[in-house]
Image (tube, rainbow, N blue to C red; front, side, top):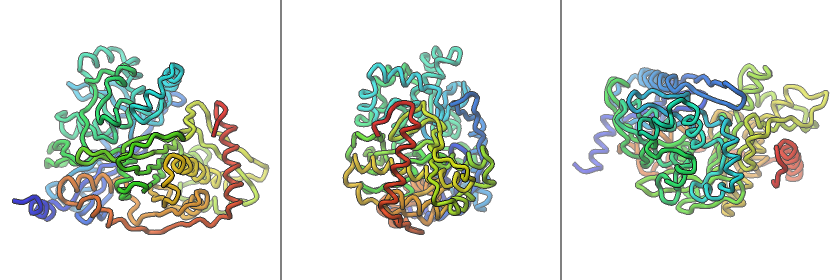
Length: 511
């Protein structure tokens, strides 16, 4: 039987894909049909633990249990059987680090989350030794606690017997995708995909494999690391214990890369920005590995058929988390969706700036030591002005990233930004974003772009979905927001933001 006939048969018999979206604050499972439409969604919130200031942890067992629960719930909601699932795609919070025993599959320490800053001193020491340029040359990344390598080293150095066990080959490291794959396949497969590998500080971007030099630099036994695969590939088979039927795991990508895939950003110069807990902007640079001189990261957008597609990325640590702070920390909101309504009623004559450096600042500043601040408070400042400041902080940080991208990639001057994530439901926020960026902002019809990307990878691998060019035709725009703010007003407001950031940084800024 020819490949196309096999694909047609599979499409008819197994017309659904299951996308597992394991994020920072929740685990979700979404069933997509063979046309890429959402059939069912199940979600469960995930508890975060903050044992010390700047520390953020998850319970890996809780993650695993939540993934099982939502996957089964989504299938039940869709009223289908596991036999109709043609493939499973996984997307995950990147950089979050798990180390487990190979023999038992039991984690030796809680998952250290990407937001965690406990290894800031380690990064500072390496910078002081003049090693950042070398690390950047190999990995495309910067020395920051954000990435996985120093988290792995911390676990090996702080859990009794861990380093000796790792050197004896008894421990495995993985980002969340690898940990889930291990559990799904009952320990038969220890793999990751190239996008997740590229976020560890241990992966050689140009060579396309783990770097022995980086492993030595961070004192991490290479035997701990998973093998690296394409984003669309056969990663193994989920055992029948998971869904009652074996199902092929056929796609993996880190959440931001999955969102870029879901947004069909397959051409150089296309960009997307995801507004979740943090904000992450990705600019496709194609086969060109572009070295940033403006504080961005060089990373992978995706990898198909052993051909890497590169990207420039800007990472903002606090976006939706600023709205959560208004709700949970200050009690100004009962639900996040109220923020745009409040902001719309703010006094236009007050210039209040929130610099949400709760866990330091990411791109393009990379200052893990600075902390949040509010400027411009007056006696008349109230919940409306604070809500506007929180939402505008996301817009200003996005402008920081877009300006850096324009500096590194001149072709980005005329780009249109495709957006997704929870915050983009707010029309007020998206209009303000277009105003501050001085660029059009496109909101897609399907907002579940991260899960859509993971589902596409699995469906593409399994012959359910077309090639990237065919998939791109299915992307549709729900609304475009175009800049309406006066240029002088935009410049004035952005200068105020830059001043606020410079006052917040732990060291004088050149930005």
